[in-house]
Amino acid sequence: MTLHTYSSRFATLTSRYSNWQLLLVFSLVAWLSGSLLLDVVIMPTLYAAGMMTSPNFATAGYSMFWIFNRIEILWAALVLTGAIGWSWYNCPKSIGVKAIVMAIAMMTIVIASAYWITPLMGALSLNLNGLETVETVPAAMNWMHGGYFGLECLKLSLGLGLGIMCCQQEAIAQDIPMS
Image (cartoon, rainbow, N blue to C red; front, side, top):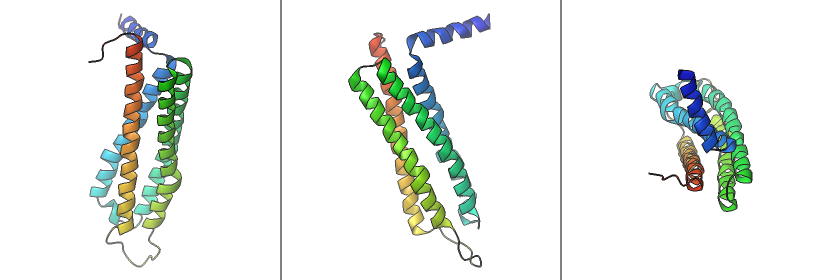
C-alpha cells in the first residue's frame, strides 16, 4: 500500500516535470547543499578548533578542498548537462539561453576555485621554515578567503536562480499558480 503511494507520487512528479528538469533540480540541490555544508558548517568548525594555527593545516585543507573541488566539477557538469537538455527539449529559447549561461557561469566558478584559488591558498599557507610556528594567518590569505566566499555566494545565488527559473517555467507551462 505504501509502495503504491510513493510510486504514484513519483509518477505525478515525473509526469509534471521533464527528466531534464528533474536532473537539473536534483543536481542543484545536492551540489548546493554540499557546498553549504562545507562552507557554513565544516570550515567554520575547523577554523574555531584552531586548524589555521596547526603546523600542517595547509596540507589538510588542500587535500580536503582538492577532493571537494573535483566532486563539485562533476556536479557542475551534471547541472550544465541538465540545463542544455532542458533548454533543448522543453523550454522557450530565451529561458534556455539564460539557463545555459547561468550553468556555464557556475562551472567557471568551480573551475576557477579548483585550479586557481585552491592551489594559491594552499601555496600561501605552506610553512617553508619548519623551525618557526605559524602564529597568525597571512594577510593575503584573508583576502583570498574573501574572494572565495564571494565566488561561493555568487555560485549559490546563480544556482538558486536557476532552480527557481526551472520550477517557474514548468508552473507557467502548466498554468499552476506559484504562491
